[in-house]
Length: 88
Image 1 (cartoon, rainbow, N blue to C red):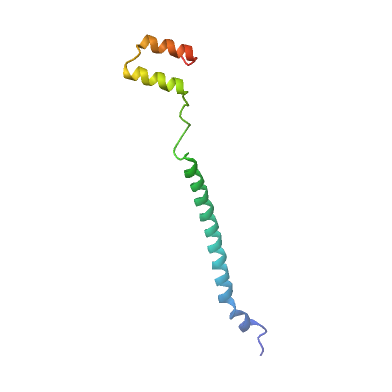
Image 2 (tube, helix red, strand yellow):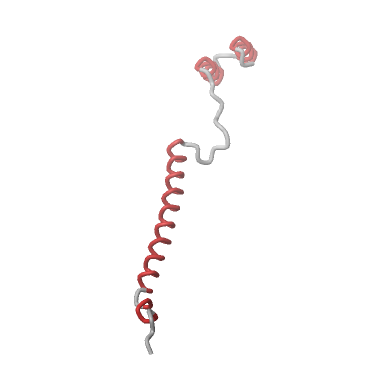
């Protein structure tokens, strides 16, 4: 009795399993690569762990804050200068 193809096809089954493993490996590699790329972009932008950006202060406000911290200005003078800067 002849067996049309039953013995021949089973010999190539290992190749199909190997190909399936390679395809699954490539899919895993692409997913990991994409996730790491996104994490690197986030890290390079410096936005990891930040809920919001810190408030931007003008140079005038920074100088005023420093002078107040050194004791060169009283609290009333500080508030008056803030009002003049439009930040009070």
